[in-house]
Length: 233
Image (cartoon, rainbow, N blue to C red; front, side, top):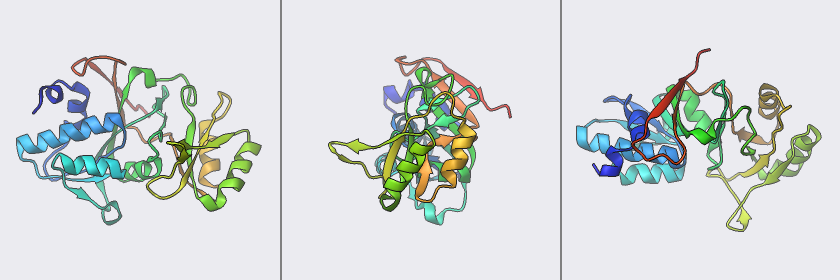
């Protein structure tokens, strides 16, 4: 195992619960990628036999590159354990996810998983959701204009996401509206609104999915200490 992998305390803790025979959900983004590399090292060093499901094409490619077996989620009825990252975490462990555009698949795998752990740096901890980043909403192109106008009428203004000068598309082939949440917006009410809105495929509000959050100091070396935050309700 490379020295940088040995010293990555958060990645080590993220994959520590994995046991032989498990199906492990792999999140998307930088933090999740660190866990994927660490999991590949454990499988290689310990000879564990596990399977994984990935929440994005990028995570699937990385997993295969480090020797992990990746199953198709559409043929996988359950997941034993998931590790993933988050863009914001509030004191009650509600989260915003989706900067990487994989929030719909991430939520499916989270709800299939028996235990969900999220990996963040301390600067991702916020007093209320929407403080640091917008809320990603995955929308069918067919309904984009209507959904955008309807949300604007509810005080939720969104911009179509672009990347590399082009309209961004998710792995599902849909568009993303990055919606500004204000302090007065109630997360549960916004969650209900989006869940009921035709044309919305998924969104990045994860209000109850986190069982545990691992927090490392922003800018800390990989071997720095990690704090555990656990859901109490």
